Length: 411
Ligand SMILES: Cc1cc2nc3c(=O)[nH]c(=O)nc-3n(C[C@H](O)[C@H](O)[C@H](O)COP(=O)(O)OP(=O)(O)OC[C@H]3O[C@@H](n4cnc5c(N)ncnc54)[C@H](O)[C@@H]3O)c2cc1C
Image (cartoon, rainbow, N blue to C red; front, side, top):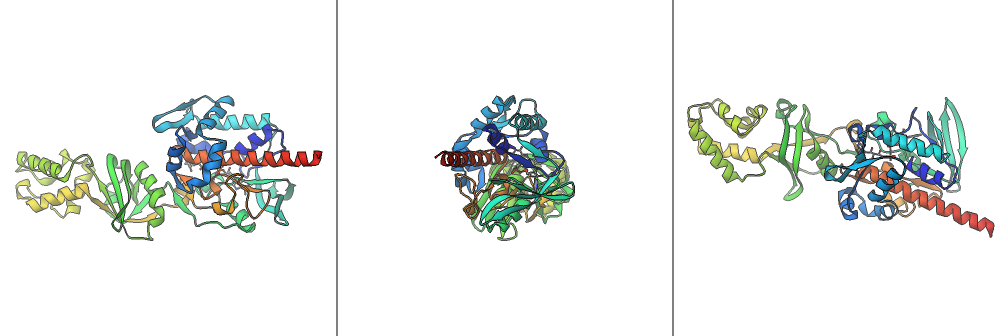
């Protein structure tokens, strides 16, 4: 949609083929229906938020950066606002307004939109893209074109239309597609206690992941237990940063339930609580430190009988309780599936595509933009910005080429 608007604006004849019955099904569900369409951050912050191939984005960001997107959208009649963490949203909190803006601009710029039109194949002749074969109303048709832009998205949330067709188009053009895995996705854990903690949300905790001696992830924030493992902002970011290591490398993972205090301070606090409640059962005094769902779990993981009277808890057992509070162990076994992932990690190899134009190096006039490329970032509006920037640099390159061809003809 972005590439279509930018090309149509300059008078090029553009057709958008969308296999769904309407445009932007995924855009509609972004940001929990509010569409966190970019992040109003600096270039360095943007690059730091990217997980795969940040350097590939230099030219694309030079063409259209987050501030550029905000002013473009404002200019197209969308009121915007920036919230905590510089996340930008439509002022109405409605993703539908972003979609309406695109529909309006597409119409204004005379971009033809063909719905229920599934692209089956990119027509390649002598190493050049010449158009596409599409299936409309059960009939196969050919649409010839001077350039083909593949903007088919990744593999996540396939119900929105992103079923990975673009990877096939890339392979058919001889381009390499890297391995793909779900990202910004919940994690499956081996521990049975996750089931017991299902629904428990934790704020101000730290999640640590080590590979051997190296800490590969360490963040502070919010998370949630589910029947299969863990989810929430801390966990989604972890999936993006270390998802590829799960199952491939031995990882040590733990939650620090009290990151603001040291083991010594925590131990002193337990000593005080125990002194004030000597004759109570351990289970009954732990409520001072943990949410109720956690109370049976902590002593069980620490190997301490929760039914014990507090005066019978040994120093060693108390220390074990402290250790588990600071190091609640988790064993990450896998990522949840693509159908639940916010984005796809991996895709059309960026080595196969020119970063200044998005054109395939091995197939002239064939362009790849957005999530189909091996580009992804953490949450915060960065993934949509990747789509906008790659669309803009691609549109600029096609316009340049068209202008040069016009000049050539004039000569
Ligand atoms: C639940 C959820 C929430 C998200 N929230 C945010 C957020 O708030 N901020 C953010 O930055 N990112 C968010 N993302 C990620 C973001 O939505 C994607 O990265 C972005 O939409 C990718 O854009 P795209 O144009 O490359 O692909 P898509 O948005 O997936 O669009 C691809 C389109 O191509 C169509 N298509 C596919 N194959 C064919 C074919 N063969 N023929 C014709 N049409 C085809 C599809 O139907 C689809 O409409 C979220 C993702 C999910 C799943």
